[in-house]
Image 1: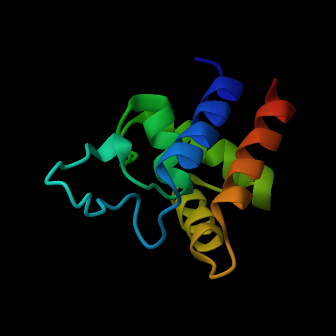
Image 2 (image 1 turned 90 degrees about the vertical axis):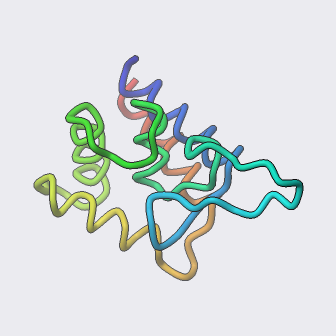
Length: 114
């Protein structure tokens, strides 16, 4: 999967699952006794990239780290791996941040890298 495809898939994941703040993902109550898988739950910006790249909202794979660093570097300038997650998380968790903001970021970035 190309970088542009990962960003577009991440946008679709946020569009479908919703935006989460304060953690990579959260499992909402469905009200019907069905438990959603982690990949079906609302996700933060980093969680969406991780689901798009490897199918899991917790970024534990080198493939995801490279995408996270790429996005953070485009947003904030050069950053290392640890700073990338923190900077994106702070942006994601801002009170005014919406799912539309995250989707727009992913789609604009996909166009940039295409």
